[in-house]
Amino acid sequence: MEKLYPDSGVELTPFTARHYDAMMRFGSFGKYNGFIENAISKLKIQPADTILDMGCGTGKNACLISKYLSADAGAKLTGMDISDIMGEQFAENCSAFPFASFLQQRIDQPFDLGVKFDKVFISFVLHGFPHDVRQIIIKNAWDHLKAGGTFNILDFAEFDMKKMPFLHRFVFKKIECKYAFDYIEKDWKEILSGFGFKDFKEDLFFKNYVRLLRTRR
Image (cartoon, rainbow, N blue to C red; front, top):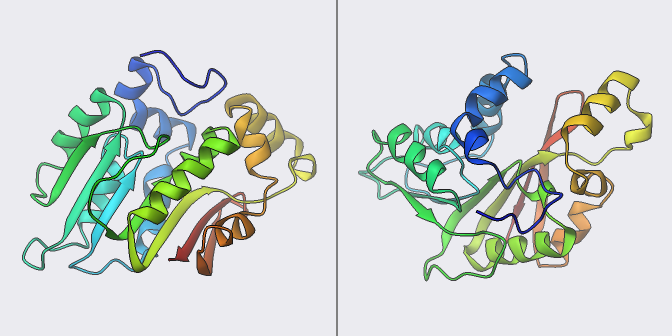
């Protein structure tokens, strides 16, 4: 599949898509699994929640989310990703959860699923797009949330890259796409407020370089 954004790191090659989870574990020195579990525990998921996981990847996050959900309570989880390879892994990884389904769909173009969710979750995806495209993604999240529903963004926090310790700065510049460099400089609470989001809460990880930002429609 041809990349729409040549400078982006979120449009993955087939090889990276097939080995994504292993690469994340390796790149985080084995800390990735525990970090994700910790972050998801803070989403305040209820057994009957309906959740849209935008850019769901292999379904690893969806499986962790699903542990809090109940089919008997009417829970639904929809994972959305453009990659059919990710879709295959999602189906395999989430096979124990009958309320979890995969939809092959771009999140960076307007869409209408005809249903609204209690929560929208997006993990390390938003930073990888040009800023005008990020706003399309945010609008998609807004349009698919119920009144009072929450938008949950797990991604880089706001920080000054020039003030990072040399080794951290070197690694960040080496592994991240150029769009991440402007992402960390923006006031995301102000941007999200412009769409109508409110009631911001945040949790910081990895020496405050990573943030779970939760906000309500």
